[in-house]
Length: 168
Image (cartoon, rainbow, N blue to C red; front, side, top):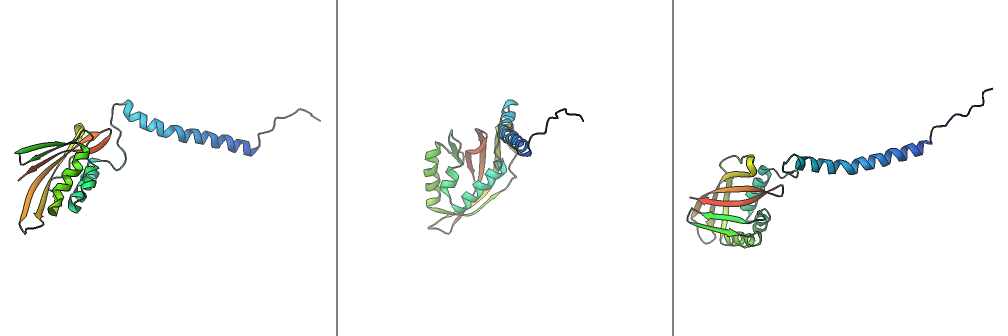
């Protein structure tokens, strides 16, 4: 009769606990590795749903509904440059942009805001799109049509509104 002692395998619950702790460590490290990789390569990290096209869609919706707060929330942290038909140019901080948009929509209603060109994909940290904006004053039936060039710029990895150029 052979009396050698054999080592028994650990209890299944201990193996399960070891696997779970390894899984928790892996789940904790993966998000850090994923966010560090683009920065290590010198790329701008972009959150999901923040492609230039997504931001242009939100801008169009905000223009159509006269949502000054929604537009102001999309302004670049360095501010917004607005040029009106090449005659007048103004700079607004993000907080001032709210009042700019409120004043813009206070006396007029948007009838149509539609992109005439497809928004570009934002190579070089800037993205542009041209839109047709039909509006009328609330006290008039006269429809005014303006071509609007919207320019987005990257702001800490997110696309934000940096310029509005209004052209007749």
